[in-house]
Image (tube, rainbow, N blue to C red):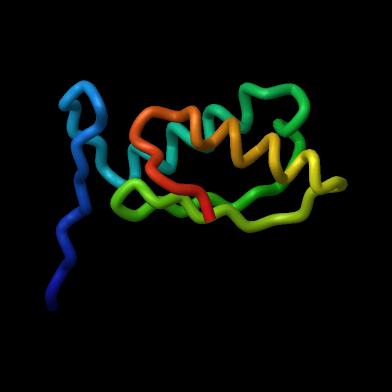
Length: 79
């Protein structure tokens, strides 16, 4: 039985962030925003690349969520 070690990356300040920690930070940012806290958005992070899936009401909401997620430390790209 093989296990894959968690992926870690170095953020701007030299802090090591695992994929799981980055996923949690993005989810926390989304839940902390009153506009988006009630939406069901799946979040996956791998090596600083965050993949979001779910449904939003408008293109503006999609853009705003992308900007919010990009502001989370450690996020390199949002898909």
